[in-house]
Image 1 (cartoon, each protein chain N blue to C red):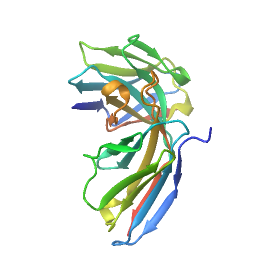
Image 2 (cartoon, chains in turn orange, brown; image 1 turned 135 degrees about the horizontal axis):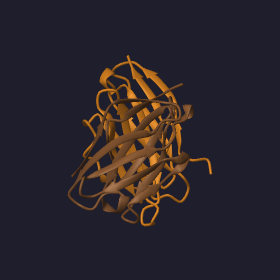
Image 3 (cartoon, rainbow over the protein chains, first blue to last red; image 1 turned 30 degrees about the horizontal axis):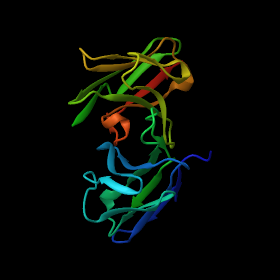
Length: 115
Length: 114
């Protein structure tokens, strides 16, 4: 299995620009999670989906952030407009809800730098 | 709501010595607990997990952790450190059978001295 795939791996953009991060979960997994990692705040859950439906978006910092999961094999996290404080590593993870295996498999992350 | 506290942002041990990374949790429901490892510029890899079965959990790379409800702890240990163990370690908790999002501790950077 290819694992969780994230793109791009690195993104450098200027303040005010729109940024879209992409995630392909492991085939057959029905839960998808977006996390953000910063030095100051550590790893934080932003939002997660079960069967393509957003369940908990309480971690989304502001209305500038939005996430979608149009189908079981693809999700996006969009920031519009981006700000320097959004600079972080964004991780996507997937798991198979409803099984005894509760492991979340993480992608390699997208390192976002907003200038 | 859940929370995790990892004592010690940096832990340094000599190669061959015991590794002990501390994790205390807070949860209003029976928790599911995890230890993840992160190598530089990589994602997180699961070391081990507690899901209400055996309280002593064995994981990969010789690591193990013991769930102690009375102490609300889930400390990670390894009898003999190896240079390749140098990494960032995260303790995490979730409820809902583990199907919900994870709440992570701040992480502990493990340094291995030759």
